[in-house]
Figure 1 (cartoon, rainbow, N blue to C red):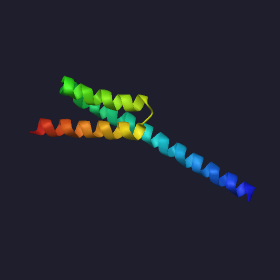
Figure 2: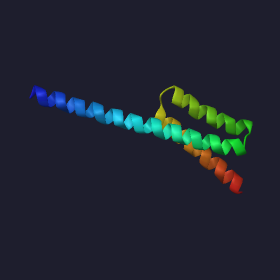
Figure 3: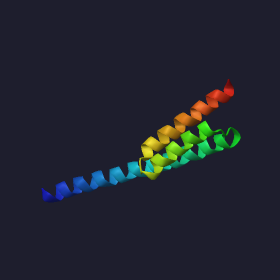
Length: 82
């Protein structure tokens, strides 16, 4: 029984680590995409969105970082299409 409980806890730890790794990867990818968009459309307001996403990354809030960067990039792409 004790062995099963230990195995269960280890499985959850491994799964949590894999999820965190994916979140970090997503954050890094979204920040790169946002940076590429900003290199062609740079304003102070756009830079602010990039800095907010980077601050989330620095605070190890990777899921929040990816969401902020994605939303900012989509907003910039929408604005350039108009």
